[in-house]
Image (cartoon, rainbow, N blue to C red; front, side, top):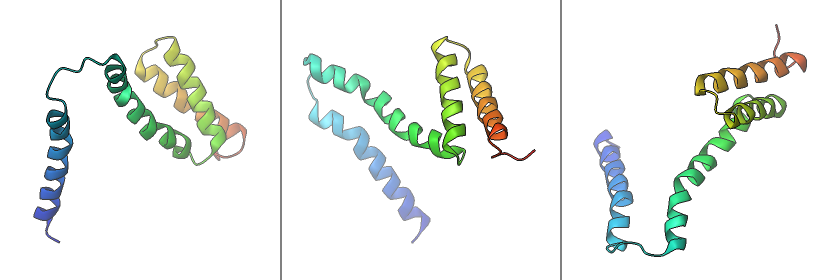
Length: 104
């Protein structure tokens, strides 16, 4: 297939995804339930995409859990993103060394 066909299909899918809400929701949404449901959709999609990646990224469940726990604790205390990311990586690395997963 030509690369132009791939680009056209991607453009069509992107357009449809953006056009469907305008086609179905012409008036202002007054339903509190629907508003709250639509408010949380981005968070749910982000979680569904990142949680599996977190637990499969290191290749070992123990290192993944250690990094996740450290990241959640530091994020709870509103530390900067770079601190959270580096600390979670360091925790996963240290647990990998302790369990003999990461050779020195």
